[in-house]
Image (cartoon, rainbow, N blue to C red):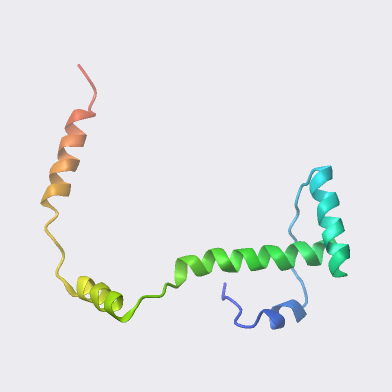
Length: 103
């Protein structure tokens, strides 16, 4: 599923999917009041803000900003050959022998 580049384009496209939510009375009433304050339906309100929150969550996982020295250190670390996994291998071997069935 491709991410939209222009949120306004997405809001104009016909809706083909359905998303059901269960709410308690307090949640329903506050969503209804907020949607009325914005002049929208509850569905439009929830979809608008849920989509915005989802984009923020995903942005935190896809993009990060580094200064020039940080970027240089990052790329230098990526260019290094992988370190020996000897310590990890020893740990895994010790863990597998210590967690075996007791006799």
